[in-house]
Image 1 (cartoon, rainbow, N blue to C red):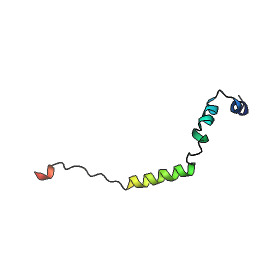
Image 2 (image 1 turned 135 degrees about the vertical axis):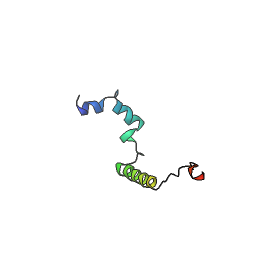
Image 3 (image 1 turned 60 degrees about the vertical axis):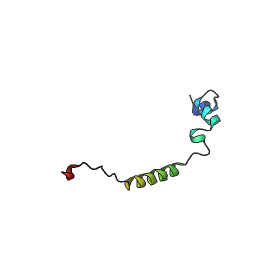
Image 4 (image 1 turned 90 degrees about the vertical axis):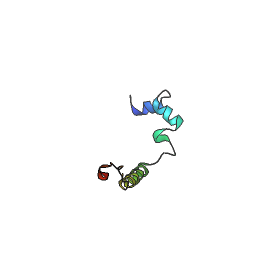
Length: 61
């Protein structure tokens, strides 16, 4: 099916997504650049996270 014909159909997922403003049709959806920046910021925050293991009690013997 040609893309133009699919875009004009009213019984398609594309039409449903346009009607409900989902995915790329969502006016409030973040851009690809914003998603990348958010991912990088999250990665930087996680790098600084350390985990302190609980005491094993071996040194108390």
